[in-house]
Length: 616
Image (tube, rainbow, N blue to C red; front, side, top):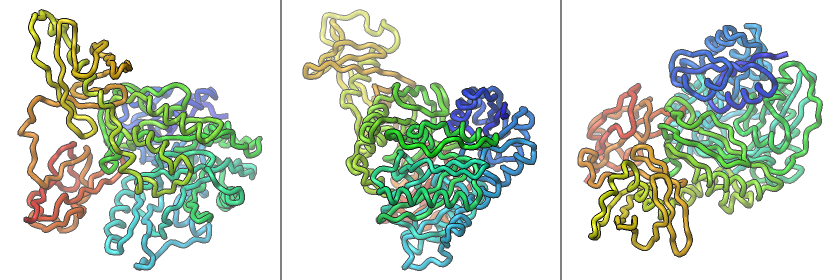
């Protein structure tokens, strides 16, 4: 009987495992890096152990340190979560060698499936060893790990070597294993997966399908269960193949078998020998707690139920601190407030006041809606996200709302190319045109009341405020009068530092306003207060490449020096932040006139990396 569990992970998944452990009466132990010393998962655990350092390679990827932490803290068992060491057979063996129970599949099963190349060979599929023009497009893929890291689509043979090198570097950083392989790229397929659960007594249950086709950078954004619109024959085939894959390696515990479905055919992708990020949608429609099932299986109990029938429909959206309109650039900073309406499930590793750093994945939370039908679940989730209060860095919340209401998605005609086709329309600004005025009126009441004392019996001069909203500047005019504040065309019913009520065409609208320095949040719209006059020191020469995020320079293009001719769009250097590599390209065709970036250099947002002087 397990009495104490250490979770060898961080953030949202650690918090989620702890929740089930508490319900089962199991003591919880966290590990944390120095960057995560005050993180939520470290705070909510019954005990926590420090892993010295900040980078994943020094902390959460150090299996030896985690095993020592488990032994020191008196744990009976280790749950790996997902990512990091969750699919590392050597780590699983080290846990068992230390006399601890491993809440996961046998190391031999992990070993057989953790390498995607070996997994495909088990299923009778061989990777490409020599790529020709006839094979294009192809997909470069990390042999270990997941989450879209170490994956590149290659459409030109000339790009293959560079993309292989980039994928190897990213995979090594994320998983400690730089092995990659190449396979044919299936265009316009749906990403469909089957959740399986197996015990030590030979029972393997398929727990239904999930559709995870909405992806960015090969990483899932929206997932749902069951996968909509699949013919029953194909659904049965997917379940049969999933059970076959699990039985081939004597699988035990929770796992997922992933496929691409195109032209009515299922193409095996891989088996993930761990719990998936999207497991809550399966829990919602099956009524099972998959973490509780993992613990029961690890304790040796047999599965005592048949595969449950899906009850209704569930949809999950991953809330990321990133800007989809700027090539998904991750965002950092203080999360001042995160509040999701009741009626949906929230899995998160953050609370109000937590900092979002550069070392880990930018996912803030998962929001899950369950309803009797797919249409109702989509409506419920879109509405909840629309009313979610997020004060802090830019997020993908508006993109999620737009995606859930996009006709191709609502009619279940989506595929993995969804964002390639629809991103511009889905990232069009959806801000409230009255938000700048509400911000200005709230600003007018911020601070001492004496600012508004001593009214004179003469008209005041109009006040002017400037804000940046969705990348555009907005100028607001209002006037102080003896009876309060006045704005052209809008009746000001009420205005104070936290609440503004405007009457527009006879309809009263409420605006809740929060301010954190120069950042303002008006309902769900974010604004930045601008100085009255632009700062000349903030200007940069044309062709300047500025760091879009804090991160580390991991690579500079081969042979790139001052004086090198470059073409617009050519990759010049790569930054790594939040476990992803981001390509910095030449803004114009010309000559590299300045280069300030070197591999290993830490940079802050806005740092000048290079300058390209445009060819006349």
